[in-house]
Length: 79
Image (cartoon, rainbow, N blue to C red; front, side, top):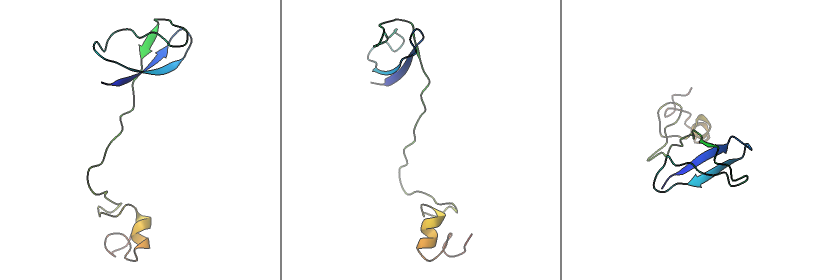
């Protein structure tokens, strides 16, 4: 069941709503009860599955962590 973001065009309130069933139905504003709401576009997050790749394509998290390990980035080749 997705959660959508909405904005009331009457009072400007932004809110989230868990939508079941018809995803195109009009959702009333919880503040002013107006039916003049519009669905907003939401940013999509990403989930990484596995090791993070560092700045040089290694499995280091960052150049800082590469340097902290003593070998520099890219297995001691440095950058």
